[in-house]
Length: 258
Image (cartoon, one colour):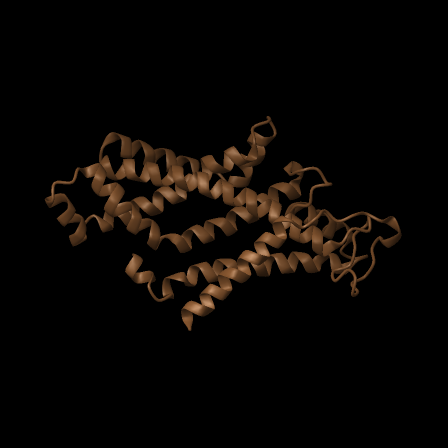
């Protein structure tokens, strides 16, 4: 039963993702501006007569895709540097990485992103340079504990090189156990990107984004309170995704993979 439920859930999520990816851009019609929710527009319309629900889904897609790309690139860098730190544990390179990570994480991410964005540096590159550090820190600390496991010692006794032990034995098990943390990083990235978009460093207003939708909600919230409803929906969706991923460790068979 559990396998069937999970298969159905994966199919449903896949259908939703495909539907979101092919969703058309809503058309504007000033004659339908600021209409309250009804059967044709479930969440009403905005000041230009565009469907608020469709724009919310498109904005969620835009911000989520950017957050996923940043997470993938920063995670790859963090895992690679964690492997280097494990191989060079206690040496100058490991200490240098630790010093750099501690100094950089002492600055708020929004301050750094806005500072570099103001001089033309892409926001995504600043976020990648910032978010590899928590991945590196988590994987490195977890890997140092995994190094004492019997299967790691057995791999060393079989004649495997230290690099092969790290790549084939330590990192895969460490990454599998850290998947819920990646979901937490994803939610943080979505919040940071939405905040940056809200502060005016996002796409053009014609391109829906979470921050852009929030700007409109702040401006029209009193006149058209239904524009806040999509923001609540987005929060619920993000929190639900993170909760589902964090519960993955309780699924049958997860412990066997780890």
